[in-house]
Length: 200
Image 1 (cartoon, helix red, strand yellow):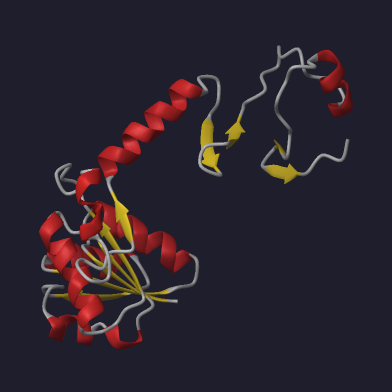
Image 2 (tube, rainbow, N blue to C red):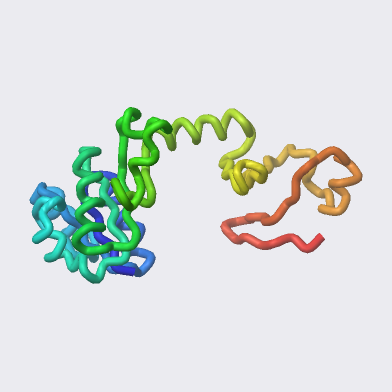
């Protein structure tokens, strides 16, 4: 997949690193020659110094053949404008923007983010993600991680089993007898960095 990342700060650098390790073709754009130099020195990606709001810079980044653009500069308005230009001029199919201002994220104004107005497909809000992460921790305090699915009807929990846990030594089919009100299924076990799906 061809992906353009606008913003070479900590977030942009991390996204570029992860996506390039997955084998995607990555181009990073930033006005800071220092941040671009760091990316050139560290990652196997194409890096361009320039304003990502300039169509000529996006063209230089091969926006015509790009599948996704990720705008994670430090400025909400610039991220929005990048997505608009990516859609209007280059018809990039997937547009992701980091938006921090809570005023832009107010549910009353969500209709602004559509193809007729601001064509942003996915909005990343660090503050909202942190709040959700804290909420998930409060809902399942013993879990290492908690991921909701199906509109929060199903939850995937990662739980560390310590040496003194009373479940150690029990077969999975014995769990139902011992805990008849347990509304959970064990779908995977990780031991010594190896995972497997339990049979019974």
